[in-house]
Length: 260
Image (cartoon, rainbow, N blue to C red):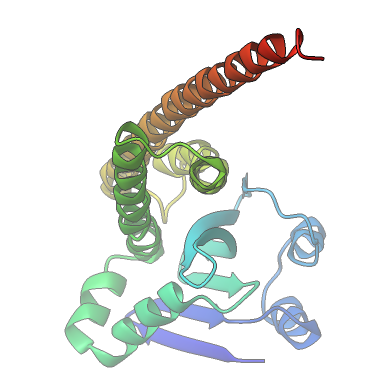
């Protein structure tokens, strides 16, 4: 188990990069969290959620990660406990994005002071903002590939390879939609949560993240519509080509009938 701790002023950030029995024991020993939260930590089917308690908030957050080798969007899960003077992040699988964020905070005193001096709510905002800003390059990459595919289609290339490529992009966009869509509710709840560590000072920050997530949703929907139109076009062109072939074969068959 790798538990790393950062302390600045009155705030402690505990980052656990793998959930195992030792990590659960550590949490049970040092914090008074609800038993249902521990059940969620051990569940194999995590869905994004937020539970607001009297003294803390528990969040299950999903964010995307791009697997370049497989050209595929995969879902990573982050569990978060936030209280008045602490923030705990737990990863189901090690996240390169969160690791880089944590070490940047640890190794740069100015960044550490900037991110942690304003309380746990502001630190949470910086983490969420960072994770979802990493989504934009993924979307830009998919958008560029869709544009190239669109040029190929209207340049005369209509075959099964094009259909498979479009299906791959659609699968990635659906994965992004499943990740981004529930985030609205979570961020909106954080923006309006009446807790000492999430006061008016953090409301504007989380509303800004909500606006950013809305823009991501709009881009995803636009790309899905583009792929839908492309699929209809390719299907129509393939059907037209098939009909021409059937017509030619029919003519040949009719021409051979007298000989037969």
